[in-house]
Amino acid sequence: MDTVWSRPQKAPRQTLTLERIVAEAVALLDEEGVGRLTMRRLAERLDTGSTTLYWHVKTKDDVLDLALDAVFGEVCLPGRRPDGAWDEPVRELIGGWRAALLRHPWSATILDRPLMGPNALERTEFLYKTLAAAGFPAPKTAAYSLSNYVMGSVIMQVTWQDHGDDDSGEFLRDRADRYPALAEHGLDHDWDATFDEGLAYLLTGMEQARKPDSGRPA
Image 1 (spheres, one colour):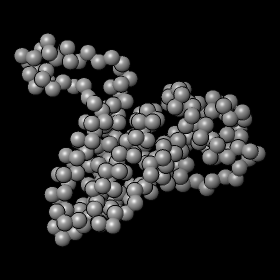
Image 2: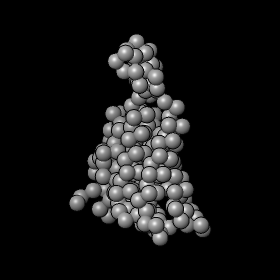
Image 3: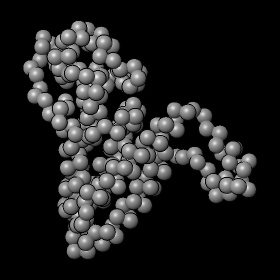
Image 4: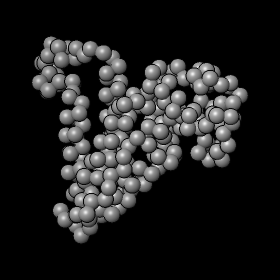
């Protein structure tokens, strides 16, 4: 597998380092989005030539992999709970993951990439360990459910907000005879409250799958 993660890191050339490249790439992506990222534009922002940039990274995909993993690096790893509780560390990790992705909305558009960077793997490892220690017979499945929930919610929020003003409420009320439940409850969200409530539903349901003699008492 030939990826930026599998290749040996090259020594810095002049004053340009991989860390500086990643920081500038994240700044460019924050300002202008994925569509405006090119190796030439990144080299210009770094005040260097493309040849020097290619010394560190081969392709734009390398840059995106590194930038996305830098976003994961912003997620603080929760401390272990002395009472053995599993749900609070998980809630903290997932909430931090969501917050980091929302600080960098472009990241939601490239979550289909393999998350094989050290920051992503370290946080996934924490999640697996926490769920395994809590007594989940299939920690991978439990982690999959949580990761898909946070990524799906972020993608939906970023996509929805990109469309600007939402007039779905009026549209649905005008069709209440056909969509009565939607007309009553709507499609608009208090995104934070909806996420927290949905995560609580998910964690409560997951509690029922734990082995009774593992982790925190049910």
